[in-house]
Image (spheres, one colour):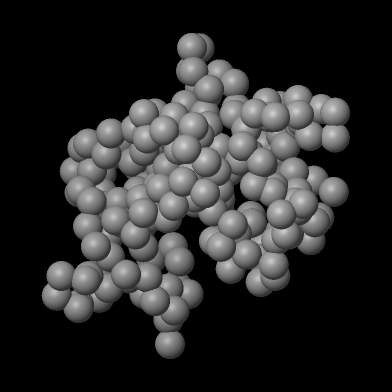
Amino acid sequence: MPWVFGYGSLVDRESLQASLGRPVNADDGPFPARLPRYQRSWNLAAHSSRRPEFVLVSAEDGRQWSGDVVFLGIEPSTDSSALGALYRICEADLAILDHRELSYDRLVRTVELERPLHGQDRLDAFVYIPKSAAQDNAARVGSEGVIMARYIRLVDRAFRALGPRIYNEHAATMPDTHPFTVREIIREPAS
């Protein structure tokens, strides 16, 4: 069974379960881990129209919102490691995750576990890395790009669930949201 490494919303068990449409039990994760030579970055932006199955609504005025949404990605770094978590998934889950992470490329990388698992302290895992077009879009949109506040809260909740030491490291290494705008945007299923 394959492993997937998440460093943003994929760290959150509830978010993963909602995407997969099935429970993820504790034997399958999350297991705190890190990806050497990478760091988290707000380096992915995709226009809301790319996900027609959802409607985005501004919590400020209740109107439908359209624009570029910015998410966490990772980028190479010589002196850092991206903190995250590993989950064991099924082969069939990969198609679901590929759709969820459609602005990312799925690559295999060696991930270091915080605590050995089945006698191993390193595992090869699938990692979603922002596609170059999505990175270029993030650089282009600048302050017009919006980070959903609910996304930040979800990532925060996910790392908090991994324990105080991991959470504190997450908080200390969470990238600054500048130049993007953080807004209360609600995601609803399209009718």
